[in-house]
Image 1 (cartoon, rainbow, N blue to C red):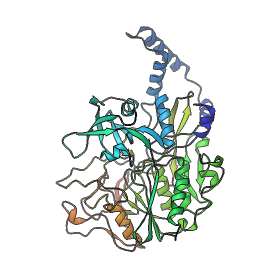
Image 2: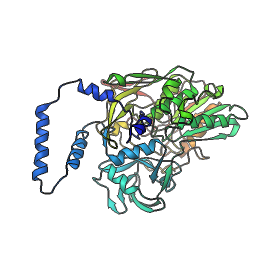
Image 3: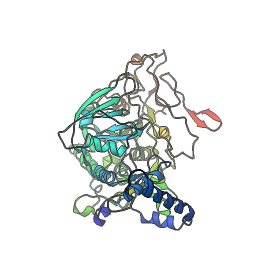
Image 4: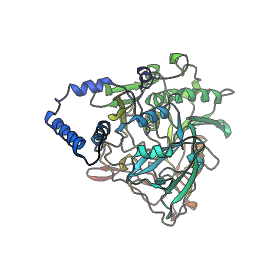
Length: 508
């Protein structure tokens, strides 16, 4: 990657897409620390020489060094990794909004690729791929033990070429065989429309370079004739993205100059506060005209005052959590849905060469009130299930990932396994923003002053005679845990507990 490209690509990414911060200060700080362990480095050199000279088959220097670097990341947190040329190029393509393939964000579980989130309006989403699906075979080739990079390479290909994925899906005894035709993926990160009764709906699928400026365009169009009477911001299944975009989106709805998010780490340059001001959300904007003009300057004032709901779920991660946490802390919007993923860490990319680098977790981020949502996630003001029949998405949270960073402010929860169906009918997939979107209906109920239901008890198996949780606008929400949380009960109204070293403490 050239110097010019690095200049435009020096971004902080806080979502499942990875992280980018070209920061030579991190390298300098590392060199100012403890002296190099010469004895251990000599051992490394001896092992390198032994393998190179005596292994049964020849191994090149580049391969040995690459494998050694990967090994150093094997015991770090799951978001730190080595980026070879393919991974580095892929991350650049994703953050800029276009790449080839199927249109899925993937992670790893038990040595196999697992779908974090299908990207809207892509071949994978149209084929019915869901968050939480485990890809067991790609074109008949087993994925067990396959690296994520190798799995990505197999799924990439020329547009219009076919691929067959074998999927293991929770709740199904037999694997699913899914036929997909690859396409050029150009992600549209912001969509909007006007709902009945002059309620605006805006959905952000990913936080990319132009997301905040595209949001301004959408909001301007929504208010062209008259300001909406209310607004729903949908961040469900949004895996995150660029920090600058998260700050810009938050700034579109908050008063100028207020704190949006802060980061804290070992390196001084990682300790920062970001505010709703152009110098923080315009740092790396790649818009036209040299990116010098403030894209929020022409935004109508109603965006900062209109009654507002933010929809979140288990798939809302990192940059999504920054926005939801900021709007919640400043009491700008009610957060409705399910507890979020809980990724409260920032990754930085340090280039090793023109086309390789390392992605390293360098800081934790905090909401304006000082909350770290690492592991815990953002707790909704009003808990509402994915569907009227119960929760649909079973994506593991940060707490379920091996070697995840702990949250020093709270004791760890046990990783939550998925509940059994208990004879329940499996909730059906729905379209975000569509006519069958239960959580959106409840958001509208809240904005229009009607009762909000967590779920429909007549459609939930084993529902008892207790009425579902109801929250009216202006009243205090009853905190609840999502159905798939490690702590749960099988009643529509759920009591709230705090997990401490001394055990469970019931909270009001």
